[in-house]
Image (cartoon, rainbow, N blue to C red; front, side, top):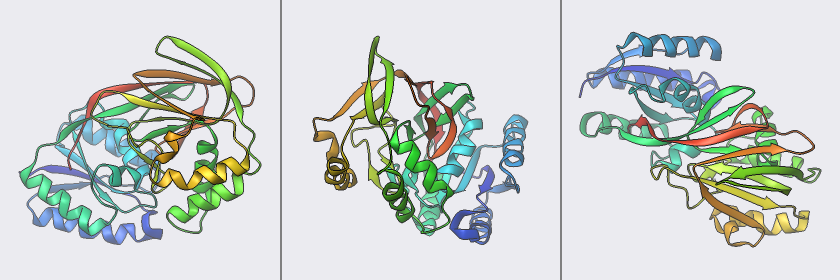
Length: 300
């Protein structure tokens, strides 16, 4: 089908190469018969305004993002419940969402998948995370991080080197040794539990950190989220279990608890934690997280 598409290109993706590759993506979409409206701006705030205005105008069939998880995160704040579909060309650091949804992590392959989908497939309705707190409401597709996973993610976002998954590993090595487990109060499924934990996450898809399979049983089409909690561990125990994250085998351990939930409220009893959604900082705990079943149309 010939569509009117808004194109959002991350200016920082690929160390600035995103702009050049974005022009290639735009030209290919035009050559395929689609109308393309650029929606990128120099600042996140200005890009948000462009996206919101374009959706409100009613002229868009879909929005195509080109970048990493952060670019998807930016777009879906305006797309949830709108009926406007999302397509994506991966060109970021982690690309966890693209990997988990079968888009690969290569922009040229991802572009071919998108072009083929535009001509032969209908968008699928996918579950979305809704996180509410002092920040207001934020949406996500992948994972809410609220423990050491959030601290590591926050640190990795501030590094300029190395690139890709190695940036996340650097953050693990630098931030984990001095991290003190927090005391959490978590309410889910009508029950409330309080205790110390090193990791607290709520997942809709499988991966974080550029390929760590934090929630291997997550399915973004089942109307449920996975709540994962890891109790207080020594550095030796962490070092032993960390390699298992690549294959999702950490959930076999007794100190990792995971439950399917529709919603959960997370707060800290003592020291504060900033929550991350899809690798982006949204605000401090407490937050209430719930699933919005099939509320985003995603083309893949």
